[in-house]
Image (cartoon, rainbow, N blue to C red; front, side, top):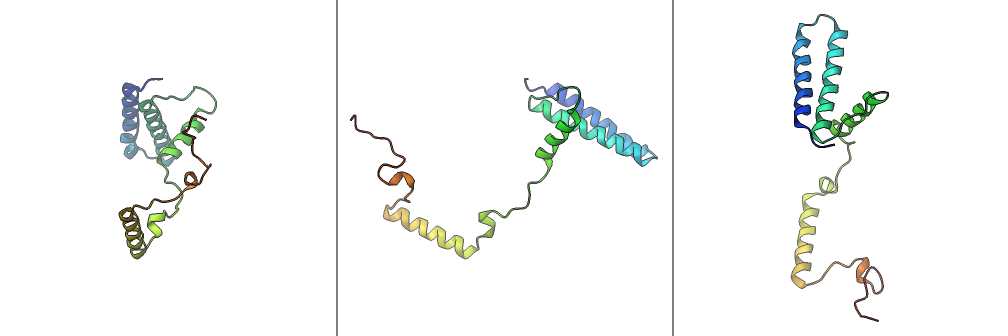
Length: 124
């Protein structure tokens, strides 16, 4: 399905209209329903912006909810390698890399061993 900016805009307008009414409501359940509908419309707008749409029928709301969680929810906290390196370690690593480049040495890897990961270049 092609990207549909008009469809996306329509859903965002619906969401905006629903949220504009929330302050006027007197019952929490009605506010919750409008917020749910607005979230659904935002999800549909995002799908349309990426060229997708949900199938009508059973499972549509669950599929849209899973999409929203995948797009909007933060990934689990997991420190990256950069975050756990101390400045001294990073500086030492940078110095070692610079010295290796200057000396002309290369990092060795699986393809540097004979017969591993390399194609033969000779015709035989």
